[in-house]
Image (cartoon, rainbow, N blue to C red; front, side, top):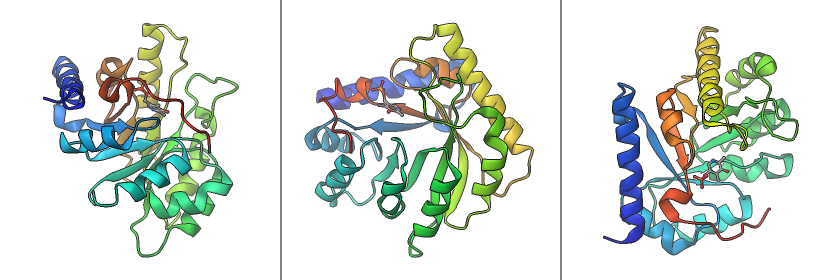
Length: 235
Ligand SMILES: *Cc1c(COP(=O)(O)O)cnc(C)c1O
């Protein structure tokens, strides 16, 4: 079996084991293959091995890969990088999901610019769960007004929350940060919004098990599927 297929299978096994441990169905957790900084050949290998959801963080890199992989028509494209004003038109036109929405103005532009031929863009609100000053993401106490506004936008579909815990944190801290995100989603659900709020996007190669234990429905895995990244080009 090719190495990427093996590694992909290994990640699926880790998800299944962590799910069993937590008394959850493995099928309730989706695997997003994070392909930023990976080449087309590796992406085709992952596709051959069954991956259909791909996550990218740099717009120009993502758009050129979409063009080169246009023959793989059933890929679902997820954007994870910062969503800035000068990118909204391309994000609205070329992606199925955005995990990193954290500003009202960006949400408005995305909703207006979403082509009417496409279903609404699936969005997660990124929460700055550790209140890190340099990190993107909305703070938990200003989340509610943003969620209400996004939920009312015709071009967007509010799917849930995303977070990246502080890199330096201990395993125990990471666990509790994921738990806090789950709790925040439960509170949002009680507002009676129309969006499904069915998604907790949390967990990367190093903390997949903790995320599944705390209720992740989408884990975002790069390194453990593809190996180390080549330096990515900011765009
Ligand atoms: C790069 C990235 C990942 C994947 O990280 P790995 O540690 O390689 O699994 C997940 N989520 C986001 C937001 C990323 O930028």
